[in-house]
Length: 341
Image 1 (cartoon, rainbow, N blue to C red):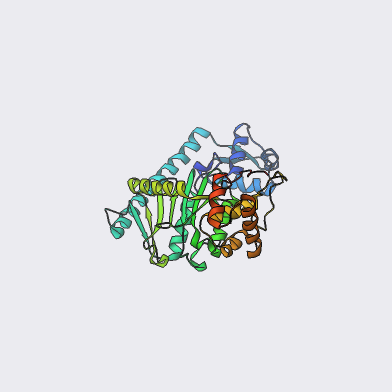
Image 2: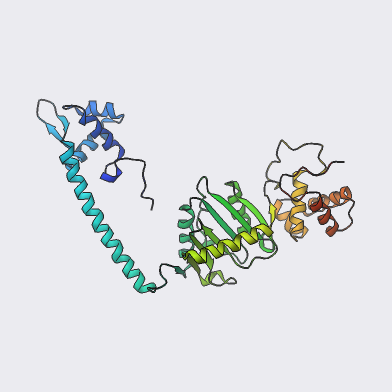
């Protein structure tokens, strides 16, 4: 639950309309409701509702006369009393939070509850993942490999990474043609995420702001549950593992999928266009033609033509030679222009 707010009156339990109404009245001896509504930029009914709630909080009073008028109560005393009540409520809430933590620790184990959480249910894992992702503010590091969880264990809607958060993902090539992994990768790259591929990964892993990490209890059985690690030392080790795998992985992009337009800025005279370079990059990870075709949304025959044309242009006869020469000429780096004739 997000308890932050841009409303400066939220700490007093007032909404924005109530705050504007109160501010307006503190500068006047009194005013009628319609004038208050006009000054606050709200409807008459909204102003009336705000005035009644402020009256219940003893922040405004009705004044006599032929027509009802409203006036602010002395702010120092009225707001001071409200602040005192809010402080009392906050103190009670802190006491309740401490009692809940004590109960949680008693059930989960007093020495480990604050270092590692054990999540046994698939829906609980999905909910915790969503919560950690939405509260990430700096970066999210992601290792993905099969077997993937089933559809009913994933969130109903893939949560988006907040604006400004850097997302880096490494996918294992063997399972990258799986529908779940493709949808997740497409979602991530659509939000500015960076993608690389590796032949083999030791485990699934997500690191959130280098403050918490999510990984499975058993790498071969997602249904066995997951661990949420909070220990700074363990999270640092897991983040270092990711960085090592990231450096060794092959950069990849899904921008050259058949269902996505190619960049208009691509030089027409370049020997290798972006789609051909993407085919070569995926081939270099060990992917077969069928897998490359599915990832890029192309036909197998189209992929084979890209490989064949690249081999002819590079003077290579085997896939190994094509990969070696493409790497030497910098064709495996995203955005590389490629060699010319």
